[in-house]
Length: 454
Image 1 (cartoon, rainbow, N blue to C red):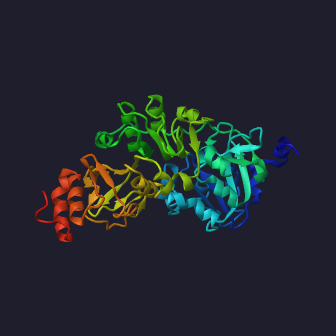
Image 2 (image 1 turned 180 degrees about the horizontal axis):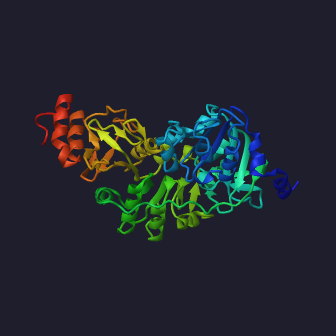
Image 3 (image 1 turned 120 degrees about the vertical axis):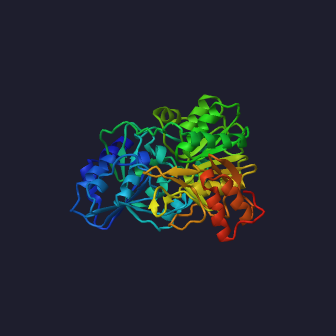
């Protein structure tokens, strides 16, 4: 049987394909542009027909019909590995739940059988002449999900690009970017919207100040990791206009910041010890120009984050500069990046992976960035540097692993510092309106010396 004949034999309508879902099944929607919008809509129509069906996914860009059409969980419950955008809205409405994880470990949950998958549903690029569908911007974690699934349904999205895998990994028999038609049970076709573009808002004065503090810490030939959020993108734009040379990319997320650096001749990957000449990533979010740049580009290599985010792999690169956002930090150097009190915002993601890996890198530095203060809905100012976490904040990076913390007030290195030194450094980058208050609290907690600076 030819690949075309096999394709036709497995072709189903979305409604026919979702008939395989049974009571109690676990479904996986994978990630972002892999969101199976046609299958999701068809599955949502089975509300009341099936019960106790659970679904996993994360970093979704479009509305989820199984959530919006079944808010009472009559049939479906959705669980997110990392909430952003539409999923954050659902969390705030009490419609979904969260699955804690360290990003580099997520694939192992499937490989070890901790997460069973009865049906995997994923959008893929059209099949090539060799019978392969490309996993495009879902390469970070999709292959282990598909390998673990009892039934695999692919939804062909005519707009999706093809991502090139890493040739060194292919030589080891690891093909993270493709799935063969022989591994697929059903195929669904249909019309899709163009790819979702993610655009960062204009930078705030505080974000510009943070970028100004970090930029001098980045040497020529540095290898960058830029996390989720506006701040890392702003720094990328800042560097694109600077005199810096020969930067590299090794990042779980590739964004327009890297494309801008490439266009300005700053991103060459010429001096990387591993994967020289290529920008290595796991997921992608940005503009159509970014998507077009990555499409079938041998200078961009996608792989699973179990490898990309492995601190041992990161540590083989010199001068890794990891830049991630956070929500708040306390005087001990603990960092919260995923909640405001108990209100969930995002997830751990790869922050702890790159905080660890960048520290292992010769010359490496890990920066965690936040505004020194924020205003609530009533316009009242609050400090993001707090005496201690007491409201249920989730500690993302423990004090024992915190490296650099940056606010619009300054940049400090906490590595190897005593509790007293940390307190002084953290207060030095707090908003000036709160420093006396923080000193008073530090004295109560026994972590302030009379000889400390005021």
